[in-house]
Length: 238
Image 1 (cartoon, rainbow, N blue to C red):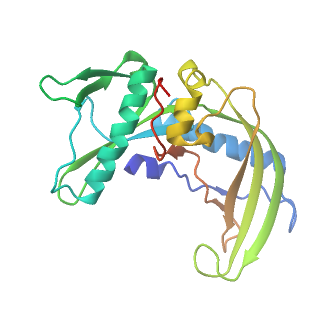
Image 2 (image 1 turned 120 degrees about the horizontal axis):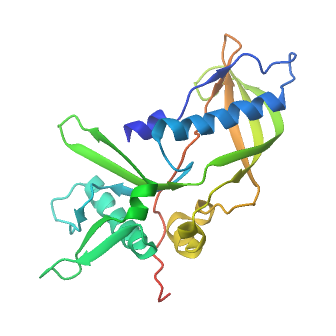
C-alpha cells in the first residue's frame, strides 16, 4: 500500500499565524481543501472515501484457506470472501461460479468498477508482489473551519515536548454515486456506518497539526479515508 501511505501528505504553513495564539480560519480552509484536492489529483481517484477490498489482482478466482497459510493470507482471504461478493452484487464486479468447484467464484471488473477503482502494488523483501484495490468515491468540499485550538504536551506524538493544533471543520461530499446511495445498508454492514457519505449533508471532522521547532505547522491527518471490511456481509435475503 505504498501509494496509500504516500497520500498522508506532510504539508506546512507559514502564513496561518496572525498573532501568537490566533489562527486564520479562512487560510486553514484553503489549505485543507487544497490537500484533499491534491490527493485526488495525485492518485487519480474518484474521491476521498475508499472501500478496501483486500490484496487482490483482477481477474481473480476464489482461493480456499489452506492449512499452511500464514496468518496474513488467512486474514486477506477472509476480507476478499466478504468484499468481492458485495461489490459483485452492487455491480462493480462480475461473479461467475467456477466449474466443478462448488462455492468458488471468478471475479472481474465491470465498466463501472473500472471507473471507481484505485489500484496500487508493492513488493515484499522476498520479491512477492502485493496488489491492493479499493473502490473510491466522494470528493470532499470544506464548508468552513469551526474551531482552532492549541495545546502543548510534555510528551507528544513524537515522544518529546510538542505543540498540537486541532482544527475542526464542517464538510460535505460531492458526487456521491448511485451505487453508494442505493446500497447504503449493505455498505454500512460491512464497512461500518461512517463509510457512507450522502450529498447535501454536512459532516464534522477534526484534523491535527504539529507546530515544529521552526514555527511551521505540519499536517498529521490523512486526506484519504481507507475503510476496511470489518463487519458482516448483508445479502438481499437479509
